[in-house]
Length: 461
Image 1: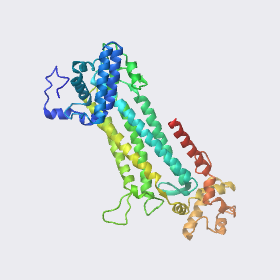
Image 2: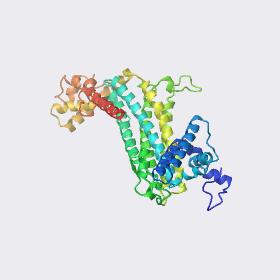
Image 3: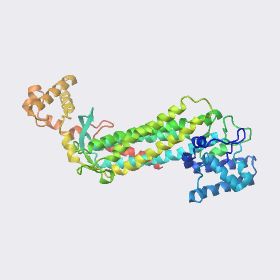
Image 4: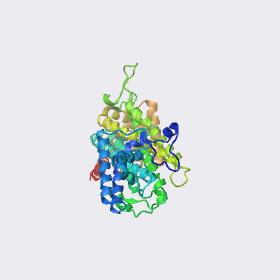
């Protein structure tokens, strides 16, 4: 395919240089956005009289034909083309003759690729957001099932205080709500049209950038043409949001991996989302969760790659910026793949409530409640804390738990303790009394679930 930019040079680049320079192998996935953007550009040229209405109409019809042929598989993208923009323009020119060459009036590949990428990533954000909201629906359903099932909560991976399994699931949900919010904010800033900035300085033609932007669903246009073609903040912001999302998925994966081990046995992942061992027949490996955890580093790498590409670039466009797409595409693909597995994996997960409860009965996770009981008897908290710690030590020496320690042993440490201590430190009571806003009581967890469902309803509109 001949070089459309031949002129200043002969356009006869070395074959190895052609391969090195080409982006068609990865930017061809933006063919729909490229053609749609060109249709809007042709419509604007016709509206402004830069082309005749008839010329603009013929170009738009020609572009429709290319889009239909590509979608139906009647036209294959030429891997020898330099990029998707050149391919589309070349085919259009082959079909319309010299008229096809008029499409590129009042634009540059610099603003064209910025437009395509914003449109493509806008669609990706919508797809990823929908997947997050689908996962949130599953979490709300599972939390509803287990809002009263007691388990140990952990700090430093040590049993700390009693919580419910539903409360823990809602903690995951709050992470994902923030992820959805970050993507929404990112999309808002992304939805600014660069088309009409041209190479870097705007154009001498009487264009209507606002018409073109509105036709393509943008909220605004870039206010500075230099910035419009050289800005990749929207890519970096998206990859940052996706990196945080993957960090959350990785943390959830870590807990699923721990919980499904024989040491915990809190949950069992469905056979559909686990694998076996090639040599150990007893194994059921949480490979999907492990892969999601591993792929987190891949998305981090995409973010770091793009930050590094952009960190030293002078204005305006530089060829380095061609490296933006592979990183952005890879991050989006990876996140969508992880979410597609995560949602059904959590939906089909079995929860061993008996093991949750048994684990909560060990580790003295009601020791804080014992201290709170003593505060209620008039002791300062620090004194109550010391007495409670001494009673835990006594239990460890005698092989008991706080619920089975005799009342005499309690009174030996503090005479204010009465028979009502056992009701005060019962796990169900410990959970019931934690009704502070955001706490682990059943009523509080129910309110959290309702909040998540209200947010889901808002998103659905």
